[in-house]
Image (cartoon, rainbow, N blue to C red; front, side, top):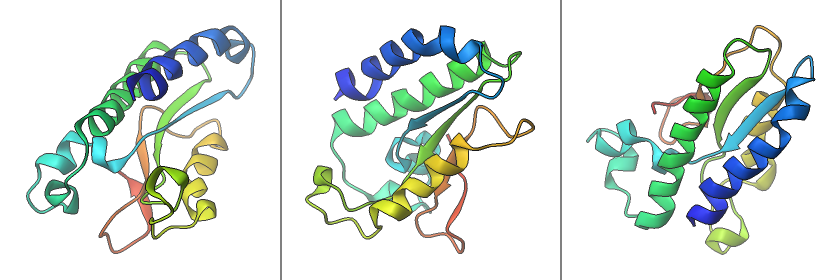
Length: 141
């Protein structure tokens, strides 16, 4: 889980940083999950606090969130925007297609962050909000 979700993410990002630094509008979007939010997992009013999930997956997504914050801090004086996206519970091979969101819906937060304007945010966790009155928005780390 960590090899793919964390160590692979860092290796690919580090390999591509020289190219990204030459771009006028580079975007790094790390795919995370709301289950990796420490705030959501410890807030008794959050649906995430009641969810049972595997420790390796959940903790690897928490690590993705921290990696996102650290890259955003490292690159804050550049035009590169670094954010984490939460696709929500999306029907994929990972969950035997039991998710209630379609792959197209799951892709929306990533596409949004990948196409941010120059004045868009960096260092944010954004995406599908489980149990919220609206579909998308900022998520707590």
